[in-house]
Length: 410
Image 1: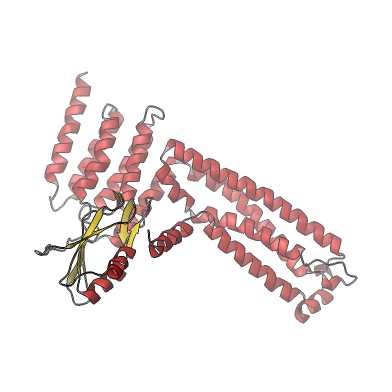
Image 2: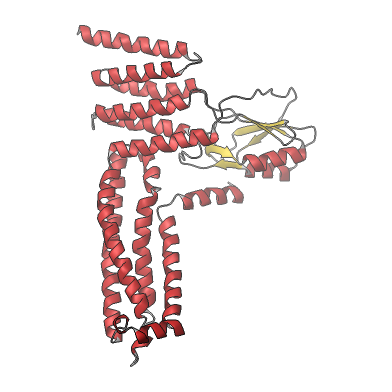
C-alpha cells in the first residue's frame, strides 16, 4: 500500500476511533483552562474577586483539595464508564456480530460523554499545576475552580444519563436500527437510481495489478477522473467494491493510445482504497450484510432467538426496498461528458440472494421465521412497481409456501 492510500486508511481509522472525539474535547477543555486562567489573573478577574467575597478561596490548600478530589472522582467515573462500554461491546460481539462493533464504537453520544470526563480531568490537572502558596486570596484561580465545580456537576448528570443510555445501546433493536439507519443514509447519498450505459473499448488495455492484498473499498473518483482526463485514459475495473484481492491481482484495465509510464501507474494506484473493514458509509451493501449476519447469529443454536432474527429481517427488507432500483455508480464521466471510469457494482438480485438465502437456510424450520420471511418477500414484491424482479420474488415465495405447507402437514 502506497503512502497516500495508507494516509487515507489511517485518516478513516482515526476518525472512526472511539478515542478521536474524546481527544478533541480534551484539547478544548485544555484550551478552556488556559483562557480561564488568563481571565483569573487578569485585571478584570482580580477586580471581580476583590469585590466579591464569596468568589474568593481562602488559601491554596483548600483549592488543591477541591481540585484533587474532583480529579480523582472523575478518573474513577471515567474508568467505570469505559469498563461499561467495553462490556457492552463484548456482549454485542458475542451475541450479534463483530461487524456491528464499528457502528457502536462510532456512537457520538458516548464519545462526547467520555470526552467530557477526560476533558474535565485535563482541566483539573491544568489548574492544579498553577496553584501556589500565597498570602493574597486573589492570586488563587477561584473563578476557574468554581467553573470546575459546575463542570463536575454536569459530568455527574451526564453519568446518570449515560448509565441509562448504555443499557439501551446493547439492545438488539437499537443496534439493528442504527445499522438500518446508516445503510439507508448511505443508499440515499451515494447510490443512483439508473445505470449508465457503458461500452468496453475494443482495443486491448494495460493490466494494472494491486501491490498488496486487501479489500477493494473503492477509489477517489475525483482524483482518478482528473488523471484520466489529463492523460486521455479510459479505466475499467474488473471487481466490484468489497471484493477481497490478493497481491498482484489485476484490478483494472487502462485503455490509452499512449504507453503508460510507471509514474502514471503509481498515480492511478494511489487513488484506490485497499484496506480491511466494512465501513457502511463507503458501501451500503455492508449494512445489508451486517443485518443478515445479525439474523443468522440470532438463529444459531447457541443463541436461538428467532424474535431478534425477525426484527433484523424486517430491517433488512426495508433497506432492500430502498435498494430495488438503486446501485452504486458504475460509470463516471469527465467534465466534457465522456465516460472515463467503469466499476461494476452489485445488483439487487445479488444482494437479495446473499442476504436472504442464508437466513432462510438457518431458519426455514421455524414457523415464526417462515411467516416473517414470507411477509418480507411479499412486501418487497409489492414494492417492485416496475416488476423487474417478479421471477425472483415468485420463485422464493413458492419455496416458502412449500416449506410452510410441509410443516402444516406434519
